[in-house]
Length: 367
Image (tube, rainbow, N blue to C red; front, side, top):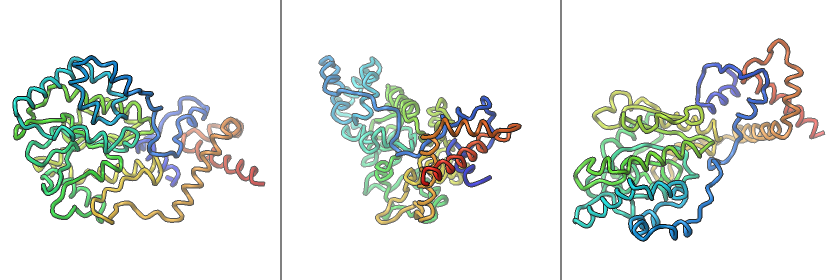
């Protein structure tokens, strides 16, 4: 398989099986071809007037939703505003009010419940790691799945994630002092989202099935629907796997494995290669700028140095795609006229021929 074909396969989810053509015209193929673009490319941003929405709330709604108004990033609030005023979510907020007013300790701190939304705004999402319940001991949960603040040492599941990362990227080193803070990943586009966002201190799953699961499922679904350029979803363990069942696996990459917990990690997690697979797909889809740097130590990086030849190839590829789009009708017409006996009966071959014709067009324009 040529280098071009390998890139095309990775960009469409890595499916090696040949796809039957819908018809004999390659115009449909051009319509599906991804254009190199910023990783923030997505469906058009929803127009949202936050002040107007807040003003429309009833007094009790506004009181119950003050935390969401103050701390949920507006890029998510624009999509979730209708979900927040449902009876189920307002009942959840009433339950939480009772927890706080009774003196129960709840994790994470209120200001951190939606920290995932602020560290990884909607249009920055490249990878979604689906967690489950927040850590339920002191100084652990801070709103990002699997992450803990110093001086709390990395929990066992996160340590196992480091082991898997080391296998994918031999240069990766775990943070010093057994650290487990993952805010750097979040700031680089990795949304670490627990399906339940709060927990009573020292009581695992104590806030499950109260309403968080519906809201976080909406977050996952909206990302899958609106982030049209494609996102990587990592779902570890059966509960997380259920959260990604309906995701379009042509548009997005879904990576599933056993949970990194010591109870299951030895059954396939260490060799799942999810961190490497995610980057291979992101680079194929977005170009070098799509790659996630998984390093957590100052001055370190898991990203491969960009060679001058790679930069040149990327620029040439971008020019070719631009040429195709500018001269699409002419290119399609020429390929159709030159086609004999289904000479180009595969999408990959049709693309190569189109690029050759695009190069001819570029040469003519340069003369």
